[in-house]
Structures are given as structure tokens and as C-alpha cells.
Length: 112
Image (cartoon, rainbow, N blue to C red):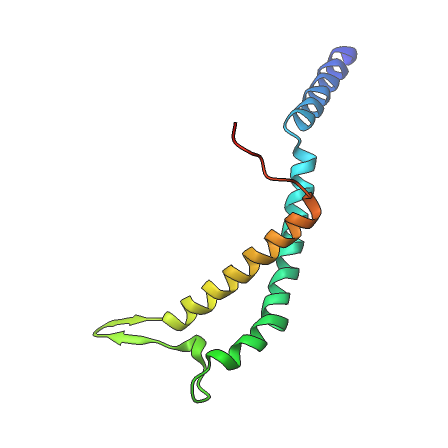
């Protein structure tokens, strides 16, 4: 009886290990953790280094352009916040592109 329970347990462990290897779960977990860490680093680059250089160019008469809002009747459109997020996205996407280009060092695939 004990041998049967141990055999079933070992079979499940082996099956789980094959699952991890087949779907590359460990690599995916590492990539996820690294992605989260790189996201924090790139956001800091954007918010602490790049945006302070861009803010004076976008500010008008000393107002905070990130809080700019257009009120149309009962609707408040926060276009300043959207513009800020759009600029952040463009900068982050470009930095990730540069990092991928350097790290991966892949050449473009040409069509046949």
C-alpha cells in the first residue's frame, strides 16, 4: 500500500516536472519578474530623468499641464493626463525597443 502511494506521488511529481519543462514555466516566471523589474526601472527613467526635461517645454504660464481638463457640459475630458500617459508610453516603448535591440542583437527577417 505504501509503495503504491509513493509510486502515485512520484508519478505526479514527474508529470508536474514534465509540465514545467514542456511549457517552460520557469523561464516564463523569470521573464515576468525581470519584466516587472525593468518596468520599474524604465518608469523611473521616464518620470525622474526624461519628463523633468520635457515639462518646461510643455508647461504654459507655469500651470501644471498634466492636470489640464476641458469641460464640455457635464463631461470633463482630462486631456492633460492622457497626453502625459501618451508621452510616457512613447518614451517607454522607445527605451524597451533600444534595450531589446541591444540585448537580443537580432537582425530583421527578410521575406522570401
